[in-house]
Image 1 (tube, rainbow, N blue to C red):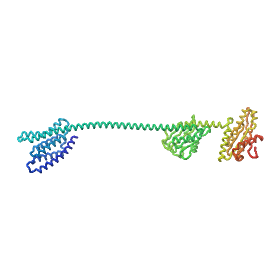
Image 2 (cartoon, rainbow, N blue to C red):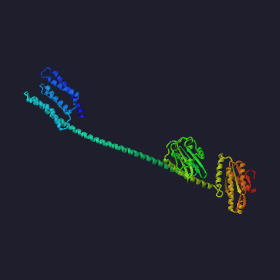
Image 3 (cartoon, rainbow, N blue to C red):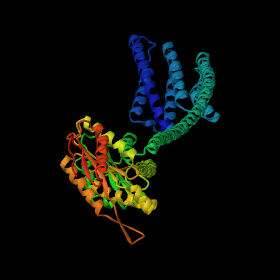
Image 4 (cartoon, helix red, strand yellow):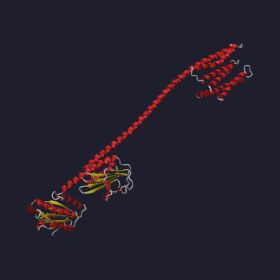
Length: 558
């Protein structure tokens, strides 16, 4: 099909060339029409051959190569007659046309073997040989046409050899170029494959780079969290006050994790109660609300959890403690110590899907240190409390009294405290008591007296301290003189009515001497309270013992 298309395409070009030659031929006829050299038969032959060629082209007679060859042989025989014409122009034009037809066949017909080449050359020169033989047999033999035909044959053979030699070179060049093209294609395909392989490698490297970057980010984040955790643990472990611990932990978790709200409830063993703290980026303080809900048991179900609870899609109204703030994610940590409920830690964030396993690990480290810090704080509170208390009686000691009085002095200076009552009492004839019953029973007497003093002081919002030996000091903030007198009278009566048993059968009773003063009713300077009360107490001892003396100018009462 490809060869047919090629034949038709070339034939169309040659028909256009034949058109031009016919036009020139007709012009010759018109110029030399009346001369004897003009042969109308030749004109008719040319017009017939050209018309036949056009007709056969129009009806697509070139659908087979052998039909084309037959037509060309007929045209060659016709043109050979022109070569033998007497008219020189006709003869020359015939020779040119003959050569043109042969060239047309050489170009159009594709010869791939030597046999086809010889056959095509034979077709081209056969009409000339046949006419030459015909001339040799007839009596009008002349040398001129024979030589002309011979010359044409020589030109055809030589031209055909040159044409095919050039064609072979062109084919060789084409072969080389085709081979180079194939090699280039192969090289290009190899390059494309290499390029694809490189793309795959680059994609793989990009994926590995992304994985490495993600791993680096995780390691970096982990390192940052570890650093933050270590710093937090350093601070947490140094805190010995639970109130400070609550403040530090909530602040640290908001800063380290970036949560919006952190709620913390911790049980203080030393005070036997829960302490609460809610830290938030919002302006509202939710601590009191959280404390109220906790005490109402709204968070009890979370205290019994064995593992942390994560909710990354918090539904509205799902948690009572959320109040009026919007929460997308939250994490709840139960705090336990030796299987005992120790507290609760809650962290909230506005965004959903905020908390992951790494957050749990981070908080677990914090929670573990919170437990240790709370235990340390409790132990420290116990030690501190022991340091503030008298070893024999368990009430506060003189050193703690000095701190309390100093604090009250500052409150009076700042206007936070308006009244302060101070009383001192001493067990009467205690040396004789020790001599009669021994020091061990004397210690029991001191403890019993301290116990009564502690009950009365605690019941009326005051405190009692052992000032030394058998002497005690009571302090009552915001108590008037009348109320202070009532309290100390009650204390005096309780001590006198208390019965001790020596050797389980002998009844023994005690009495005390008391001195009382009140700021600002009786004492204008709060720092003089202790001295004035002590002076009043000694007045009681010097005036019969077993009485209450009120520090009042020129007046005493019992």
